[in-house]
Image (cartoon, rainbow, N blue to C red):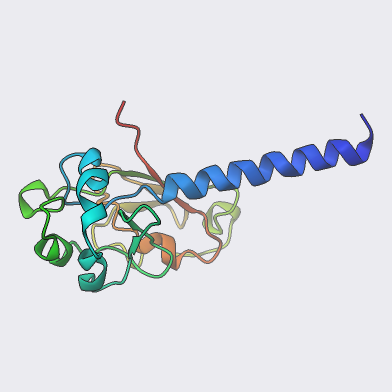
Length: 168
């Protein structure tokens, strides 16, 4: 194998990994559903009202007409408006729960973990779910975290990672 082939194969594997991360991210659902399968059964009949009523504009309607959350510009306030707007009972107040994600900090990208004072993720956290060891080394306290996503938007180095939890 020549060097050029080696670097091409390495680059393609990184691109594949990035695409897989994007597809995982697109599956983060609003916090008001009972069954994932309901999105695929009922949302095909809808015009995406949940997205129109989202005060933070984080609900995106995918190509398959199902809603997912995008935290790049804001986070979820759990305002209930998407559930109130859902005509097909995919999103209901009875099923309200924390968003089904795991929030982590990439310590290689995190400024604080690299000895630069930064509280960008902690400041917007209304749940006090980010604690620092001293002034450095932030940690997500999973028992407190509601997965609202406000920390991801505020991180200047994209060190906050929010991924769907495995339900298996």
